[in-house]
Length: 198
Image 1 (cartoon, helix red, strand yellow):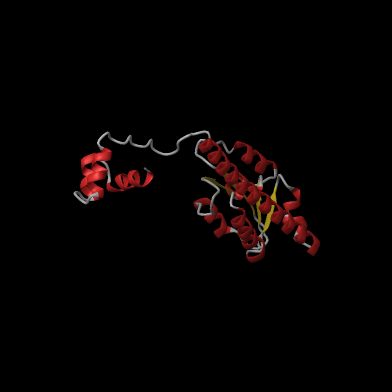
Image 2 (tube, helix red, strand yellow):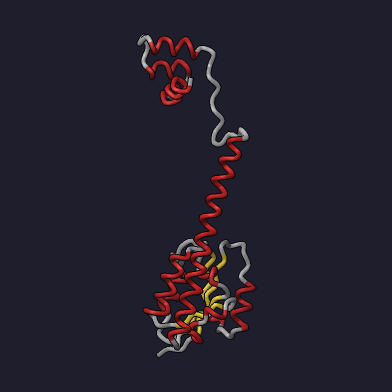
């Protein structure tokens, strides 16, 4: 059984600084050569250094991260990765900002495992709810802005002065909708939308 301590650091962009995470891992005595760093979004686990780390991780090893969101942002995938690391690989995870999520302590008995799993489930529920709330607030904000008359998207083309005459010609089948659109210098869809809207 292996007993190596690894550290994982993730920052969302190349500009972000990983020093705080690096200091926290050093204080935990994670060897510098065992620290893997990705400068990528946490939306999924398609990250080169994380994949490399997962190939090295063995039963009995420990993976240390500063906070659960350094692992990722998508909590469904975090739960899946947690299961792979702790159940399939039989390695431990230590989340420095949340002592309850330290499977070295909790993984030895059923209660500890239950507590760690419960904390993860609560975190994933809170994160999911927050994501849904953000989407809902965005929708409400857009609806309120529309009520105030704010226009979204490209500004609409003004309807040309000769529109009514062209529309009459089209209605009397003297010209096709394509010819009408050409005369008005707009797309066929725009012409038909103008007809519909008026």
